[in-house]
Length: 237
Image 1 (tube, rainbow, N blue to C red):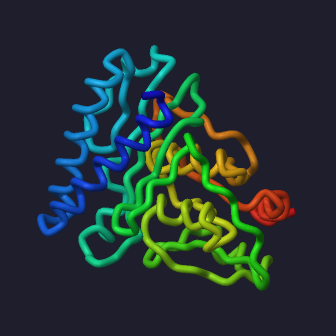
Image 2: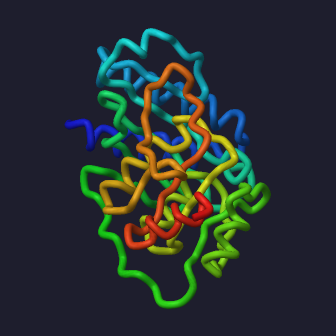
């Protein structure tokens, strides 16, 4: 299968496993999902490197053009609170520092969204701009956007769930300034971009992956017609 199909299949397989073992809790879910993804990737793409949240990093990946970036369980807290659906599995392939191939599974919702068959972006909804925010740790940019856009806050869990809420037309903007890592955003960014959404840093700069330091502090995913306004607000202009 091609890379797009592989990403979706891997996310689906890991999601099915996580549903089966959900009663064991998030720590065990992280471990078993990571082991499954690493094993399947080693079989399917033995020459590619892997960067996973749950495994030791290797500088050898920096010399590779193709690097799979995975979050075996995005939203450990939400996963540990069934029947919540706002958790995900991220599988992305970075080629030359660009995350353009990937899939995000929302297992509890029975969904896998991927770049092979990008979801169609719904039409813009009437009413106020809807802003996806953390239920417990809203980032510093939230109040700025809420005030200047007169936005409606929509609380939800994991990064992948927030990003896919924009893809699914449930919200209009997901802006994060509280610090993330490459595995938090690579797959969501790939899927969102394939669906026609705007993806960037908060200042509009492009997102780069497979960097020596995988820390990627901020992220913007939003409807394309809102991008210039959101970036302007965040830059204080």
